[in-house]
Length: 168
Image (cartoon, rainbow, N blue to C red; front, side, top):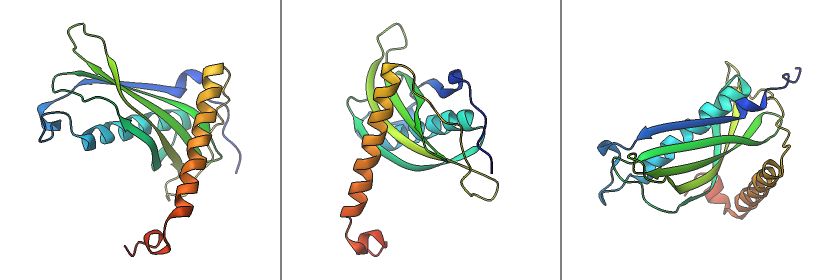
């Protein structure tokens, strides 16, 4: 199978913006972490699909950290960008910002790395265009993605056998 042709760099970034609705609130009155994780996954999917031109599936989410709450009525902005690629995988960095839509500053609430894999109609992985980091920032993010991947791989090695086999 041949490698896909180059994808223009402007197709490496995707931004979603919307207002946080009351249906996303947890018992503490803030946006539920699960709702935020869904938004992150959707934004990462859109970014990966645009980059690869394929349907994509989530393989992992790493290094997610909730820094501050998102309030109902906040403007929420999710910025996703391809930061590294493998043969069939794309490492997508997602940053989440939120704040008052009436002119308040949007502050970062969360960020993480999502690994997506492009698949064909049968669900088999297919090659994706290579992402070649050009700027210093892109190179730092690519290194960060590979460091997180190495850390996640090491964590998998630490799992007890019964956990890895789904017996616990």
